[in-house]
Amino acid sequence: MITKSLPWILLLVCLMAWAVDHYRLQKSLDDVSKLDAYLAERERESAALLQLPPDEARSQYFQTLLSG
Image (cartoon, rainbow, N blue to C red; front, top):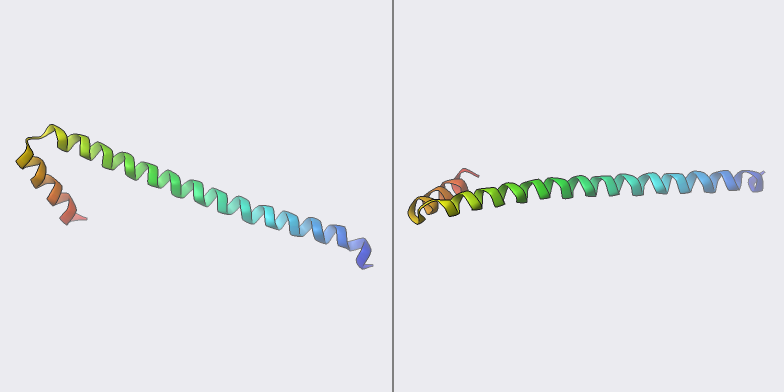
């Protein structure tokens, strides 16, 4: 009986391993996407600060640091 069900058990284990791997990959891709969006926002903020006079840029930079 075990020899007849062994291929099905192995198939189930392989499918479960694939599902876990797929979930982890999707979660990693979501994390990378969030990080990419965050870095793009920081890049836009930096570009905007470079357009301002030095004193005003410094002031706004410290305000953003203090606000979180």
